[in-house]
Length: 263
Ligand SMILES: NC(=O)c1ccc[n+]([C@@H]2O[C@H](COP(=O)([O-])OP(=O)(O)OC[C@H]3O[C@@H](n4cnc5c(N)ncnc54)[C@H](OP(=O)(O)O)[C@@H]3O)[C@@H](O)[C@H]2O)c1
Image (cartoon, rainbow, N blue to C red; front, side):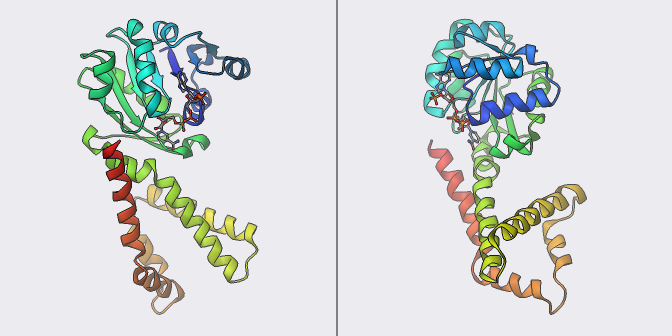
């Protein structure tokens, strides 16, 4: 499968690097973007190719990944339309751009996958949700899934749940960074040096997340296991509940989800 990536910023770059680390042959990857000199330097380093235009990239690729900002998607679709034939697969990671709106610009009865990755993709620990148009075969889907598997975990969701995914895992890293910062602040308030506090906080979040994913345990049960009767943790849990922690997080996800619906 030949992969063409249009737009090589944070996410496009992370996906390309992840694919190469995950075993993709760099010779099968072509990119195009606004800064040919920078792209050429990156391409030489990674062993990938640079295409002169989005149209020529599309002609040479089986999977065309659009990784530009949502506001730039329309111009890209216009550019690729002449070369985007029905066997090719279009993948868009643009927030808020529906499969229907993508198809309206590049042709109905087209193979289109909408993806919502997140920034931990930059360190190979992303979470990506995928939705597909009815024209995407299982083989097509598996080919796209194999790309995003290189940068973390992948789930397929019906497209109407993409806004909820955006509010949870798409925007979620920001909430988690705030939580890590707040945990560290709590440590600093109680005498820990900042650097140590940040490491203690980040590793606590990482380890707890791995416990959920690797043991399959319910987060509530795992929380209960930390709370000794009459101990320190249950005191902290009482305080978090009193301050509306759980509700604040639920409302944050809902606010991001509603914003995504408006895009
Ligand atoms: N960042 C996230 O957390 C996140 C999460 C999920 C999904 N996404 C989605 O991922 C997409 C990319 O986000 P990002 O954070 O990677 O943005 P980014 O770092 O700004 O990268 C976008 C790249 O596309 C280039 N570009 C713009 N118009 C182009 C065109 N017509 N042809 C080729 N290249 C073009 C930009 O160049 P210039 O800088 O010169 O314009 C830039 O290098 C967005 O649609 C976003 O919704 C992002």
